[in-house]
Image (cartoon, rainbow, N blue to C red):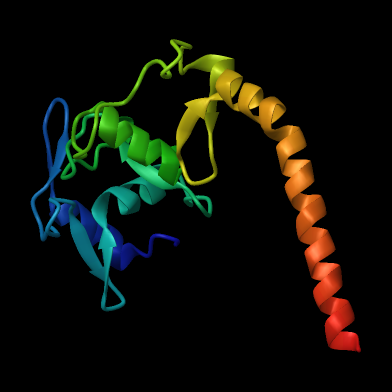
Length: 161
């Protein structure tokens, strides 16, 4: 969203600069993120700050805080990431309830680098164990698919008759 002069001026009215964080002193949501009404809709202040200083936010990207302060709008403390990056960042900083992030799989393989598989939904798993499981179950999967295909063909024959 381009920054019209009207909300640019309103934005700076609610920013209190310090040596580190630039704190949003205006309205905040229930999670402590600053918000400013633009066209009668709440817009998050840290996202507005990104757009003022860095330009448009690409589709599918989130604006994350390095400082872990939801009220901060300092562009030097902000960076772009995916939703999976946001969840991982949240868990690494201890803000999300749930078990701690595993560093190794149950077989002792490191969950990092090339061995870390992150699914499209953000689930982390061991690539080595995943490949071993797939190899071990490949024939079993083929047999299942053959049997499923045979059952389906029988049903189709019955319905056709």
